[in-house]
Amino acid sequence: MSIGVCLISGGMDSCVCAAWALWQGFEPAFLHVNYRHLTEKRELRAFQDIADHYAVERRLVVDISHLQQIGGSALTDRRIQVPEGELGQPGIPVSYVPFRNGNLLAIAASWAEVLSASHIVIGAVEEDSSGYPDCREVFFRAFSQAIETGTRPETRIEIAAPLLHLRKKEIVELGMRLGAPFELTWSCYQLEDKACGRCESCLLRLKGFAEASVKDPISYVE
Amino acid sequence: MSIGVCLISGGMDSCVCAAWALWQGFEPAFLHVNYRHLTEKRELRAFQDIADHYAVERRLVVDISHLQQIGGSALTDRRIQVPEGELGQPGIPVSYVPFRNGNLLAIAASWAEVLSASHIVIGAVEEDSSGYPDCREVFFRAFSQAIETGTRPETRIEIAAPLLHLRKKEIVELGMRLGAPFELTWSCYQLEDKACGRCESCLLRLKGFAEASVKDPISYVE
Image 1 (cartoon, each protein chain N blue to C red):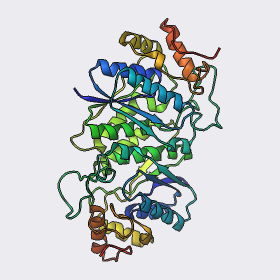
Image 2 (tube, rainbow over the protein chains, first blue to last red):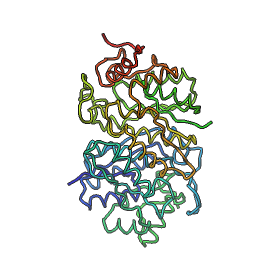
Image 3 (cartoon, rainbow over the protein chains, first blue to last red):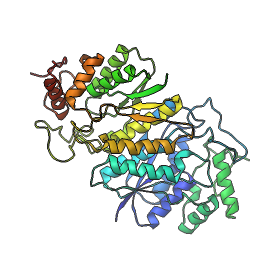
Image 4 (spheres, each protein chain N blue to C red):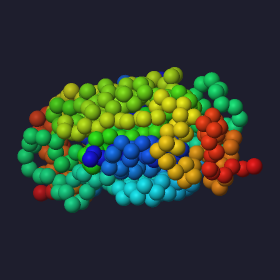
């Protein structure tokens, strides 16, 4: 059985990814990265709850400060407001954290190489999403090549992004089929107690559950 | 004048790189990454000294712990001994830090995107070096593509590795021509007071200075 390093933020997509990785038969190694974003504490709890749910022993929690030092995003700089309201605005949203997934994949690649893992599993979504450039297949293909050329000759690591071309509705449906513990997840960008229901992450999540005709088990602000 | 994010470890190669970037006319932004490696403190001093020498105002010092948490290298795991003795052993040396340059370039790319920098400058050496996989042109080409695809459409960042195909002797000669302050640099992998003169980094450095017929201005253990 080969090891899959799963990037688990604690959100619904990464939770479905975890369920997928276990269903695929990977020996799981769960990786969580705190980057001093607004909801870091709540997401860490979601990560640990999901890891407990699946009894995953191999866990790595990494704290990095540089994305917050660098700023340039509503998620890491409190002076930039998290947008609320409508989905589907043109352009890259201000919640985009510059090259965040490049940083996350680099950490995952280092760990995967030391573990001799065969895969990195990431819950990125390209279509029904916020339009971040580092959530696209073209980026994951390029990063795979960077890992292939930047590690030992015997290291072979593939990036699996099983949700990449699913719509949010289909992600909810897949999670339901695989028994993913949605009640343990956290997606909201700005609150940690009850979800705001208004940021783009909440709106995408609520849209997915609504279209799949499934009740979202987490609590929202009235 | 365009901004160049310069990865400055504090070693002789990064110092020559800094001299090169200034000579090229880049507006410098110096980035140093502490990854809890053995000589982290001494290298940070070298970084600040080189930045002071060139009166660089834009500096970012980043502390990451995950490469040490992950281990797998003599530079980050004290249980693995730093090798001494002969250069040119076959295979990847135990001083290789898994995908370290992938992590460093990801940090540099995030900062470069926020600064609207045009270049990342890195002092990697392919030929006359330790044979790390993440110091090869094929890797930098792949990582450039990852940056290109994983950042905003308007972001254009090139990776410049001006020393990549130079021999150590030529790096010393280039540094001398550009007036690089070699006396401020630190290359030793295991000591922080006087350089050991025996680790592969010291051996490569001493070989470069000897072949260039230049006296290395730093102190070595007798």
